[in-house]
Image (tube, rainbow over all chains, first blue to last red; front, side, top):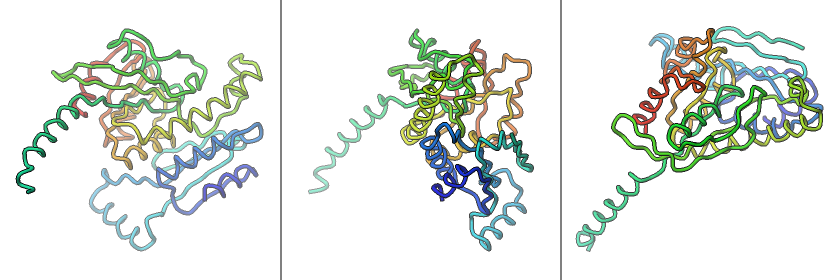
Length: 102
Length: 211
């Protein structure tokens, strides 16, 4: 997966993945990105649009998430990764995501 | 036979407890670039050792190597804590040497700086496995809800590493500690100014409580 992301972002493609990377995968992706940075590839912008934190959710929300996770697997959510050359910034808050392009 | 060796187990436990007490804790400083990690490391080190850890600058990626200060003993809340302070390079997902040129750095040096910065980030991520406790340093004037902050906190949570969030730069007018508290309500957030030393005692207390 990480090799695929690096390969595609190097080709200046924006990737939208159905599912979310976990924190360890995100760290591995950052490491792989750093290893690949050169004159033509200054890195990536990434937004993982799935909060793993459920502590602050109401019981109803927690129950809903539990059922959805059981039905669709835990890796639901959305991950947007763009090449830093094209995407200036991915602005995010818990509910929105804005891609600022160069 | 096993019963007869009871005294040996007791002796072993006694030695273990002594060494556990004397164990030096590895305290890591993590965060995005320009959050004030080295300023905080310098503040802690100056307070307890009387010497600085590294140089600070407004140019991003000033710290490009993991810097350590050993044998720092902090005393707070009636507790003594011996620790190794580990200041890590700021984590980022992009490093463009062109960005350094905006600060008047020449192309060759900017390229070198970018190369070193990438190595520093790799090193910082590798060090995540070795930390006993981490202060996640965030710039209180910025939106805390960044992927870098989420990735750092997520990784520490996955490793079950205790974390305190230092909401830094409260000396600046537009600092909003509440915004960080709202973004990460499950963590202890302490507003500080590493530059001026404001509220640092609170941070020491929190570290002592956590370890």
